[in-house]
Length: 226
Image 1 (cartoon, rainbow, N blue to C red):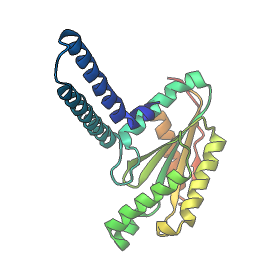
Image 2: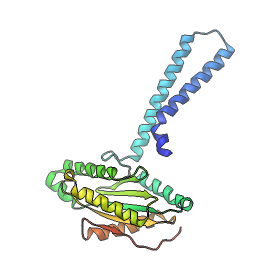
Image 3: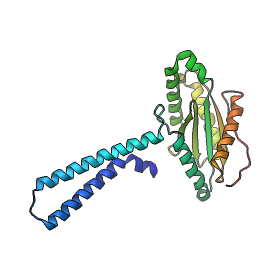
Image 4: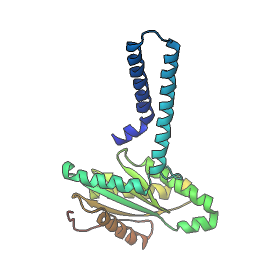
């Protein structure tokens, strides 16, 4: 629902400007029936166009507030807001929620060997792999540097581990990713726990995976309600 509102902001504001123009026009004509039609047509067109441009401007502001400009993924701010919303929804949905944290192995070597532009290109290509292997309801975000986080609604631990393994293999086999591999930590909960706890457990799993490299590790921790 939120994404649909965001995509159609210019349309909604444009329709709002058009509606206001018609109301003003109607009220004026009801008071003074004789007036230049051309003037009011110009007012309606002008206000509608201005409203659409304002909508596009607002949409761009929201876009840059929640998007990472390099990868076009969501940023850390949106990730936390979305995760908080999904955790609250667990009370109603009675399903599981999984958090996946991903780190590119030896990313510094790519920068040192090929340059920072190549490092940026690797980040964008890895992001494309994430998008190609994820559902529309999943939230993919750049957590920081070469680390990414993905929220998987309605996904239990088994489903999340299969998803993470699919990502790992896809990146490992991709010819566009400079031979890069990733480590992935997975944490799952079916109760509305604190965000910091979920992140901490996924990060612990990631740390275990990084001790081996090119590996997926799932967290095993007791669930506790807020």
